[in-house]
Length: 222
Image (cartoon, rainbow, N blue to C red; front, side):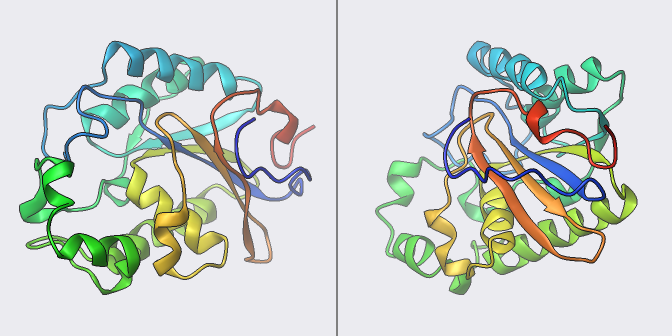
């Protein structure tokens, strides 16, 4: 199924949140697009979006949420269609606000002295004119807890971006934010977070890029 998976099945009363990164775009890995509008999936990315829908098809997903940006909406669309749902747009799933770094080439940003802080101690960094990593983490973690409370015992899918998902996964694994860069979230990968009725959380699977997810089954359903 991919990397860093946990084999035991979640409790039937748990809420499962599928954390899905959007598929590839023409600038993936080259540019820091941030929240700038107008970036769409490439043909490969559209194929990845269809593959996501197939992978989660055996799980009775009851709701689909997506960042409002085009690339996440387009990744969510096949999954929403498969389940006869409309994707709900949620600002809490937005990409990090990169401020003045938005649209810059990653190779150029990597030459800046601040890049070392981003890589080694992200908890101390704020993007010029944008969010800090702490604010980004707190935003998405609060969003996921809120959605879990809204959908007790259900399975829902949330389509977001690499950095917010890495921050959420790092937090839900009980790790410090400065371990953020150790997380890997590939385009169109699916990670699975469990939110139990007693308020505890854990990652069930991280960065899976292949394989059916039906074995996890729907929380609270046969």
